[in-house]
Length: 119
Image 1 (cartoon, rainbow, N blue to C red):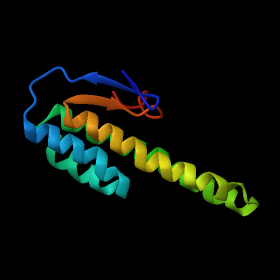
Image 2: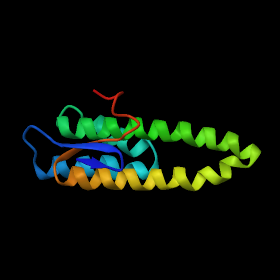
Image 3: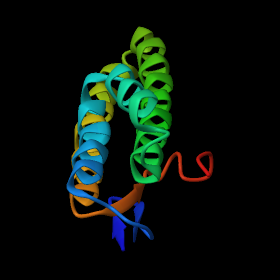
């Protein structure tokens, strides 16, 4: 299944509702930055492989977004960055929502930019 260019696949293993909820939060709280997924990952990484994967994917996506924000800020000096800022903001909101909704259903989501880095 392909969502906004990302890859979704069912998690192979036992999942309870807490795992799904924490996986969802790891993605959706990524809208606020890298710290919330980092906290969830650090707390749950040894308890749930699903939450560990969700947190790692979310953190790597937030790092990619941070790089995009830096590039956009630099490009703002020549006015191009101001045109790109709404696009980066839309990515920062849309992808975590899609990933969070997938996690709520027990489905792993790999962001298109980061899927090769997280294994």
